Length: 330
Image (cartoon, helix red, strand yellow):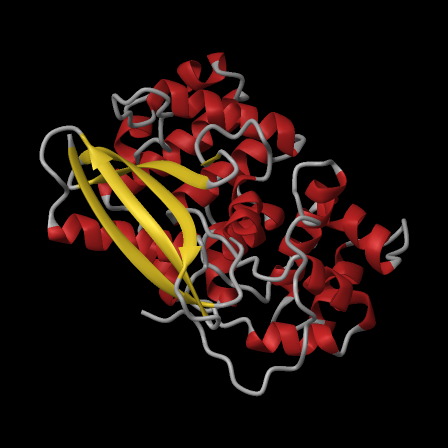
């Protein structure tokens, strides 16, 4: 067994538990695993599946938090380049380099937002490991409940995901190569509609052939990224905005067609029951450029209400307008 370990120093505040829950969304998610202290995920590094485990520690400095990361795989330890790749992926997925100072300043002056920011202080905005993974998540959850969508994702991971032969390890998210080799009928047997199966496999084949460069969307502005996503078969407005937020980290985007978000906005911000996309967009503009962060806080609020989160055990400090604060330290 090959093992590599490293630490990431992150500027406080950081709550790993809240960040991981914003990523995994439901307790039956077997791709992004949280056991109460450790976040575990299977990734492919140097062409080999590895298990990545992340735990939160103490940096010895109240302004810093430490994450301890362990990478385990069969055979020799990951290369230096492989470890650097894992570090970059963890930082991106857990939003460790996002500067939250402006959001906390906004929240401190917004009566409706300040309670959410106080309750979930330290949640970092998560992202999926790739734009392709974000797209498949969006397709899986289209016109279905989030609970059902994540069951579908668990099944496709079990059938096609990379595996590490450790006791208790769960499969990771499938590579584009594995899904490109699948047939729509195979995904249909897992519970996907044939239309969704064709969309997912078509996306995977486009990436593998080089005809579709999803990661290039990182360099596009929001308008061009949305236009490019809408040009893909099976991708509508909700899916495009979902990918902008969860795949590209565009924190100004609050998916206006998201049913769960609308319900949460009604509960917390008195959004009328008749409100539509334009009403949600207007609210998001009032929080610009942090509508996506509000989306994540509302998600955690719903999870806490369902009993998934222990937000009372670690009472956060009050949200104040910070004089100086930067993003993650290296």
